[in-house]
Amino acid sequence: MQLTPAPGDVTPAQLTPVWPGPSGFVPPVPGRSPRRRWPLWTGLVAVVLVLACGVPVVLLAGGLPDTDLGKPATAASPTENPTTIAARQVAERITAQLEKQSAALLGRDRAGFLAIAAPAAQKDLRRRYAALTALKVTRWEARPGGLPTSAGRAGEWRLPVEFRYCFVLPECTTSPVVIETRWRDGAEPRLLAFSKSKSSFPVNGRSNGQPGSLPWEVSELVVAVGERTVVATTPAYRTRLPGLLRRAEAAATVADGYVVTGNPPDRYRIFYAGPKEWKRWYGGEQPEWGAGYAINVGGGHYEIVLGPESFEYGPYLDELLRHELAHAASLPEKDYADESTWWLSEGLAEQAGVDGQPVGRYEGLDSVRQLVEGDWDGKLESLIPDADTPQEQVNGSYGAAFLAVRYFVDRFGEERVRAFVKAVLHDLRVPAQVSEEIFDEEWNTLHKECVAYIRATVR
Image (cartoon, rainbow, N blue to C red; front, side, top):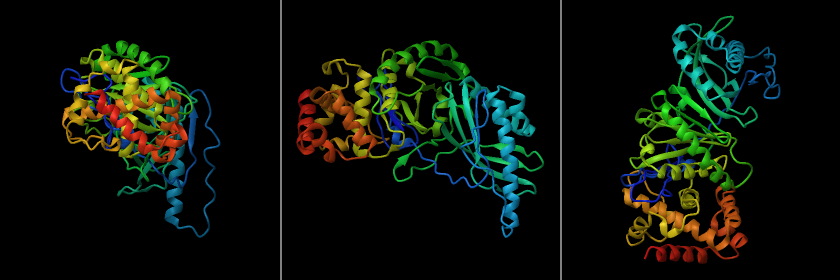
């Protein structure tokens, strides 16, 4: 995930430090030393499932199950283990129940959504149903993630289920989440328990979702939907939604200009967290200096979380929003945790955050000066801060990343910088491989000139 620090004595552009962790890109908080967000790609995690059985359930609001997601289970081999046959049959019965529940959710039938569950599980399901419908869920798919296993009691089974969903627009690419479930078997199995999703680890450095408990899994939500954004929070902060939606819509117009490949996000998803939610959503564990973050939830979607103090930032909140939404627009569908390119991802988001303001007005220049006059080794790839990096040094790292990207934009133009971002962040090519191809100059030379520009700017 990409983290952004909280604002303080820095410019709004210094919003998001990126480092490997459970969350995303996070900016700093105003009124004190700004805190930064970590990189989206580092806090994002991929889920690799082997779906061994069952018929995938794919429903659209107002429509029928898709038929191309899977094939009906084939007849068991005469020599197949009887236990496997029994588990397969249980999976088929559970799949039928999940299909009913999916149809009920998309048909806005709460009673039908709850009907597959035992009374003890219905309280949790009521909250999830309310949150999902508030977010305007338009697509909901459910499929067993393998064969069920014994839950330790006769007739009870455990089964991981992969859910895929869309909000607002039914034609979006679905985001996945895997949830452990427990069932009591019968002609119509009953859902006994619905756990919260857990973070999983990246595969080969790539992250593609499953970041930890999602807001709609664990919290009551109130939601507002705009032309380009969806904003949500808990009922305690519902009065902040109209203003947040207005500012998010303005930030989205800027972020749309930072798309590197393909189309802008169908909707930017933004969640405002209170103190409790900040420590709970997406796994929690944010750095002290973090003001917000962007995190990959799969399907090419990044969700933005604003920290509890973000409404105290004044104009900095607008910069924070531009910064985080630019991450959602510019980062690849599958994040790649590579500390050496942190400066490029965060610098680009900072560029969006300042929204064209002159370099001389960037509030983080003093922090950059302290950085370059300190023990920085003069390498862009070493700018990434740690979770316990002092606030001023975090601000300096973000500021230096901003100046680096501004150098390339001013010298080569936005089009070639986007091509560079695509090659490095999306295609995973190292700068030395693509520098001459895109900028007509060797990377060693360009790197030295860029660092010299950073040093000269803060003298």
